[in-house]
Structure formats: structure tokens, C-alpha cells
Length: 126
Image (tube, rainbow, N blue to C red; front, top):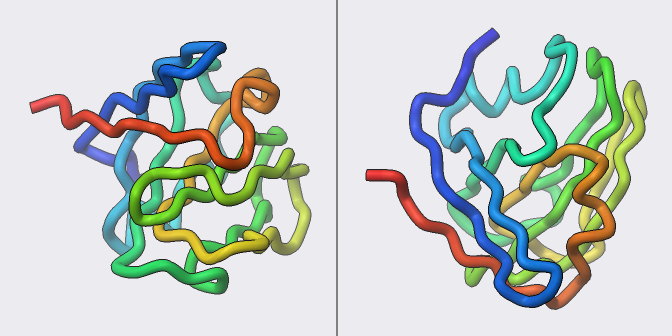
């Protein structure tokens, strides 16, 4: 399992305010492994997958080899939520309804914390 080295803080200030620590998946190995084979995810941890431009296909995800369901947020280049899904383990594919540049995978407890249109702020931990 490949774990991302860099982490960021992702904050949604609109109620309910939520702060997540996310590992950044921005290379082939971290994107490929993602959350596969992990046994669980912390309720306030996630993975942020980054693409070079907005796309529906490049930000699609699969749930093969997943041991748990997750909340998935698709974000545009300005970190606005453009789609959200409760992704079920072993489901073949999830594709955003709108082009996205980032995919944020979170614990299922976070599903009701976000809505399409929410603006998120991403802060580096450097």
C-alpha cells in the first residue's frame, strides 16, 4: 500500500464547519492505490486526488478491492463541490455529473456535511 507523503487541510466554513486532513494523491502510485485494501478510514481523514485539468472521465473512480463505503466529492479547479456520491464498496465506476479537477474521498459520516455548490479551502501543511 502506498501512502501519500504530503497532506493538506481542507476546510468548509459554511455550516456545518468541517476540517479534514487529506493525503494528496498526485502521482501514478498514490492514485492507483488510493484507499484500496485499507480496513478503515478515520472520520476526519481523506484522500485528495489531483488532475491537471477538469474532466469527468479522469476524475472517475472505481470501488474494486475496497473494504468499506466512502463519501466522494468532486471539486472543480476552484475547489467548489460539483458532485457528491455515497460510493459503495466493489461498485465498478462512479463518474461526476460535472467536470472536476479534484476528487476527495472521505468517511461515510461526512456525506451529509457537504452539498453541491459548497466552496472548500485547501491549505498546505508546510
